[in-house]
Image (cartoon, rainbow, N blue to C red; front, side, top):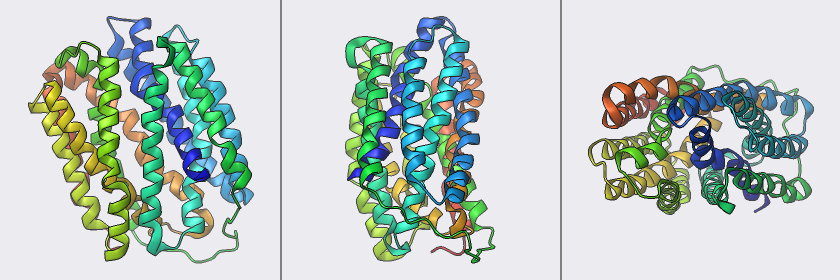
Length: 373
């Protein structure tokens, strides 16, 4: 339970800004160029995250501790959110969001490594499901907290409080069980690289699709209250995810198979992107949220379990999971580069069709992994 609270807290700190606050802030900084401002801020933050995650993971490996990195990173991240809430320029937003991303990757890197530290391989699908569930709770809570008080600053303050308080129970109650640095067992296979490529492509497809969700609802679907629309879609997505995130991981454990679940889940997520491309209505957006939640639920739990089974060495789990997590953050750097010209040249239908194609490519390539069934 405490582990779930800590995980959710980190995702509150990320997704309150990503789902609502950064977009609203960008619009206040430059209403006419809001897409470009948001793209720059999101890309800079993702770049900071991409560098920070493996570094924090390696430091937690070498220190033989996970808990100090969880607490210290969360406190620093909460402070960064408060400062970000006061930014009134593009430069201020970039600096603040990079700081938040760098700080919050410390607890995320440590929390990710706790599962392979303490959970046997044949139960990691189930535990990965609970890990994914906690992330979803954090995304939903962050979106809701971002709307507290009605102002950008009040939203940031609410998210900061949740981040700082949410990790406290875990750091008090959890026990350390970090592998010895003397571990010599090393897996020398290309599967680690293929796991990275698969995750990168599926996450790139999602990042392309979700970056401009607020603007899609406002400008394409023409929802009267796009902020509330984002929150409602997030809630619908979360409920749909609940139907598969734990069940998918548990079924994967029972059958002893990972790849087919990852492939199927990725294809379902690609269908959600196609729906957004061809059905630009509020009903279409709701349907896509349901489909995306069903697919991403199974993907989150099973892909995490798969990745933990191809890590090169137990002694470097934190660092290696950090490298894998680059496949989550690098798409956030590249998505603005890809998405902005796609929207400018072909509009949202082209944007979402490209997202679907990229996701399908990642889904199929999972079968290049040979040492996991």
